[in-house]
Amino acid sequence: MGNMGGNMGGMMKQMQKMQKEMMKAQEELKEQKIEGTAGGGAVTVIVNGHKEVLDVQIKEEVVDPEDIDMLQDLVLAATNDALKKADELANKSMGKFTQGMNIPGLF
Picture 1 (cartoon, rainbow, N blue to C red):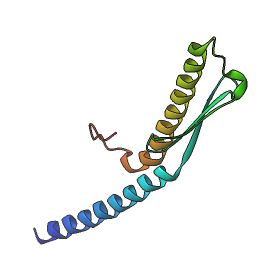
Picture 2 (picture 1 turned 60 degrees about the horizontal axis):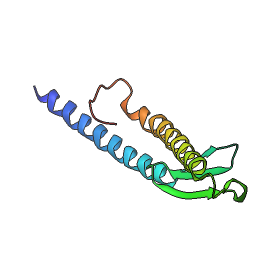
Picture 3 (picture 1 turned 135 degrees about the vertical axis):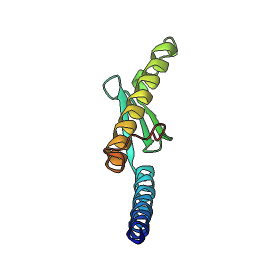
Picture 4 (picture 1 turned 90 degrees about the vertical axis):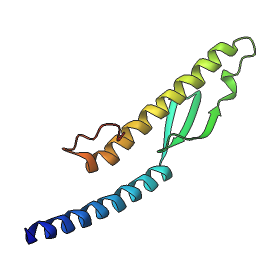
């Protein structure tokens, strides 16, 4: 029975270490800049790994007052592209901590 306490202590240390590593990975994700584009680069949206929009760039030639709908569609497409890439980066970065674990609602 005494050995079981040692295993629990070791397991707790491992969990604390993993938690610190996960927090570090989360911070690193926040520093990452992910670019999404649409219209062949006419619209670029930059987000971080926490899916916060950092910048929106629109090339002057796509600004047509007669066709605002197209511009809105391009911004939407570029934003969705950037967010999809941010999700992929987060899954890749954080996935190493959850391999083999089935924890509902973690991501």
